View 1: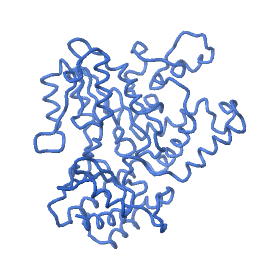
View 2: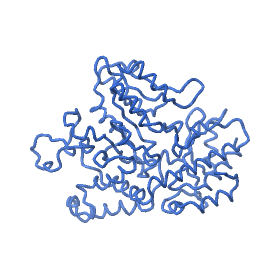
View 3: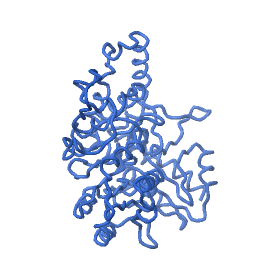
View 4: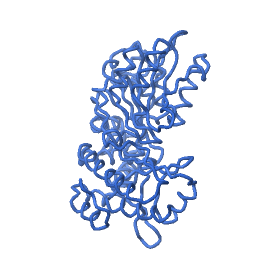
Length: 420
């Protein structure tokens, strides 16, 4: 597209946007004068859909009306409530319903999955992560190594960008596996890197890992609701993601979990157990021996928190209406325009470290500003531009296609221009 650096052009793009009406379905924070903030932190916490309050209120009303009988008599019965989320969540991440469940929180789910899929031996015990993986992932795998009696430093292999570069190269991961694959038990890689916004080739990662008989897991915290990971066809063994970023389910909300169909009926996999991953047909007989359910539901432990799931259901209903294909199309246009405007700023201080190829990124652009510190972020905040600062000099900005506009992007860049 031949972009233009003008407010009129941005407003014209918004008029032509088939998803422009969706913004009205979200609560956008406002300043003291009633003007919308320029909100670019959907990669940390998505905005609240206006209908979410109604979804939660329905469950509060049914709790008041029915008490414990709400498990059966509520408008949306609580006993099977998690099943209401499965189909749409599976569509968002490109999985079969059998392969997906919503439960717990992200790092908890990663640990539960590693109970099953990280089975180290004295020779084959190492774990590969990105060098700039999200800290929670690093802490999780380090603690898993230590729990199994290994030295966390020796057992952790970091896939690093080359010197002077910001992005990861797939050939460097291939080299790691060629040289150390016989010692590597698990690859746990972020599908979209939280810092750079790089969208990695998940299918290729699975192929590289499986060629050396390694298990491959993916953290999709920054991918679910953002990119289309096509998890089933990718062949990865497992994945997990939070729902409070691009899936707009509210602070600290539940996590999604994927286990590939090839593992669905393997009852011999080691796992922690609770009554909610016991066969639902005999679960309430209470005195039955443990009989694990097939598929991703076989990793549940406890009955689901309905109020959190109501917020997720609200969001997923919106995703079902809009569709990931339409969201990705707008996302590529939105970040394309954003990138164009950033590159129009007449300064050598600014560099976008996110891949320029739209197929290698989601909706986040990470903007590196030389000789900047957090005061730049604070100055943006003073003008109600809500971005995310990452040390030492990067502003992470996510124009989310569900609710951000082309005018948002134009106005944000105009403010940034005056500050640098």
